[in-house]
Image: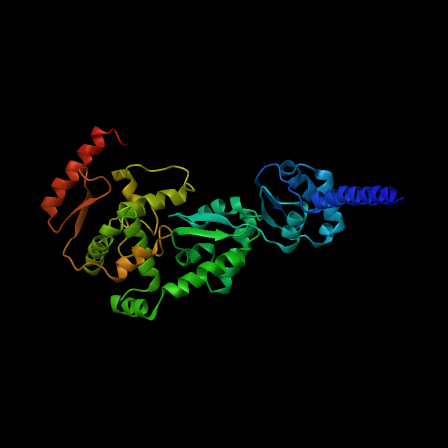
Length: 341
């Protein structure tokens, strides 16, 4: 009798253990076959969520059962989610219900215009570029600007993290906060001392950035040179402004490797060969160093600069027209030797 009771108890434990193990594996056991990311839009339905996750898990049926049991269909959050090895169905469902998505990194480079930038950025967002542009145009107009292009000064070259679901207003708000933090009282004092408007500072900073190729060690020298030209009433005659003027006309589809004489008359308010003064706005998104270079420009007497073929990416500076002519010829000869047209 006692033996029979022991057998029954043992059978109960075995059955309980079997179903307990099945329960544990279903809810908590590793169900991830491979790591990856899934994108769940705001308008996704339950089947779309299952289809997105299915390629990364071992057992779709068990995930579906747990997802239904935990009410995922009615309580999911849109986002970009990292499916990681070792995670169970409960982990995955709770992650999506809580909206614990993984941010994407965005590189903001020296984009010529905002449309270029948004076209790149929206490859990593739920919304398309048209939606982004339209919403940012509303932001610009609310701030008293004409359109999205006038927001260029709020952005700095760097790498940023955003969620896939970021809205245009949330996206801009991060850069506006950074812009406001950058303009400290010290920088505002230097702005007043410069005699330049904020728009002129950014326009010059964009020229400095393009002329320097982003190299910090020449920026203040270049800024001093262009301020010398500006204050003497000379045309700035910056090649990058000509390139920008041409690019604007072609939607940045025809890269210019070498500025030729025929390019110098390109009609555009940004062309500093055709127009005196500082352009009406920046010719690219800038970095913080280039703005600081304008605010802390080197006090020099340079008027001319020319690329130095012996030090790629750097320049020769001079106040002498004769010396500049020699430097310019050396550079042109180097271009011709490399068949750069």
